[in-house]
Amino acid sequence: MPPGAVRPGRRIRQPDPPIKINEVLTASPPPGLDTIELLNPTGSDVTLGGWFLTDDNNVPKKFRIPDGTVIRAGDFVVFDERHFNAVPGSSNSFALSSRGEKVYLFSADLAGNLTGYDHGFAFGAAAEGVSFGRHIISTGHERFPPQISFTPARPTAVRGSARWSSPRSCTIPRPARMNSWSSGMSVATPSCFMIRCIRRTGGD
Image 1 (tube, rainbow, N blue to C red):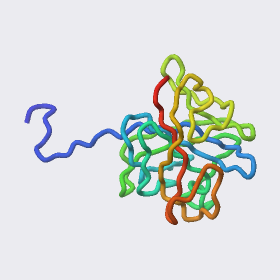
Image 2 (cartoon, one colour; image 1 turned 90 degrees about the vertical axis):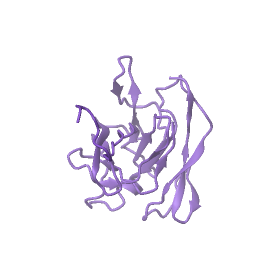
Image 3 (tube, rainbow, N blue to C red; image 1 turned 30 degrees about the horizontal axis):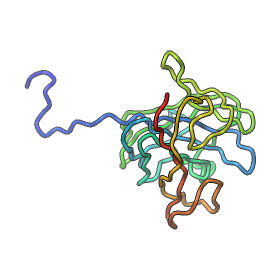
Image 4 (cartoon, one colour; image 1 turned 180 degrees about the horizontal axis):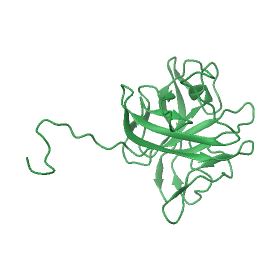
């Protein structure tokens, strides 16, 4: 068989989509909640069910994103501590420290096998109510500076030149321990809840 040829019947796995951790709030003032926002910068919807969020890149399989979670092209999805810290102290939960640590996203299949993609960053101590947001500098590298304001499911405050459309909703399964609804969320069905998503329509 020539070099580089694919054996007949062999399935070529497509690369995992580059979903980004876009903003995190780690020092939420009561009654607020620590929050992780993900961004889909691609032009296609992405199914995130089975992927993992963690605060330790050496222990990737902490919070498993529920099956059926879809992040639409150019949109955001937001998880808060009712999701990733539903059972504090358990092996499948974690908290974000206001004194600084890490946060990572790992791709996986529905069987829980990691598929090779990860994205995340380390952050330092945060002032109360101040989030860290993804920003691309002139060299093309990512930085996660403190934000002017916390903007879940909206562009981070440093992106003043971007143009965005009106909010719309996307659905992720409702966490089992959620007993109340925070601002910006509305009940969709007994088994899921809606979060506000915004689609990028142009700009840098």
